[in-house]
Image 1 (tube, rainbow, N blue to C red):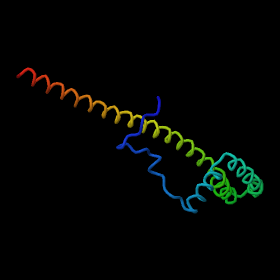
Image 2 (cartoon, rainbow, N blue to C red):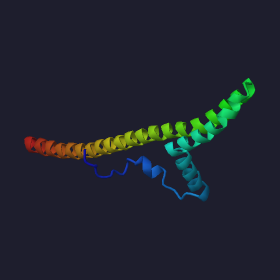
Image 3 (cartoon, one colour):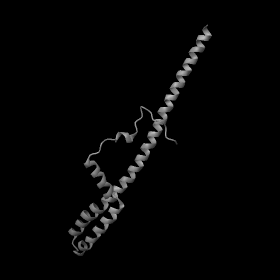
Image 4 (cartoon, rainbow, N blue to C red):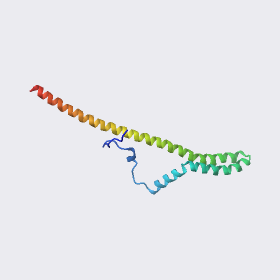
Length: 133
């Protein structure tokens, strides 16, 4: 489907987000992009596994649970969850763009149909006047 011509009543979702980004916004995006990557997942996995041996050698449940909750869940799964969210966001963005294109097409089509209806009304008026004269 080719991109339809813009319509004054249909706003692209990307245009809603266009605003000047502050340093904090840019830094947060940079952090999320780098921490939410599979490279960070693998790196954090190695870091977590380095301390796993010490936790399991204690044969004590508290250090093992502590390692699982602090190292594994927080350190390793956070990037994996962020990657999954990024993948889901890309799908949502693609759907949003497709919806925008469809709405723009329909709005333009409706405008064209309204012009045709007005033209038909004019022709009918001319025919009515011709019939009565």
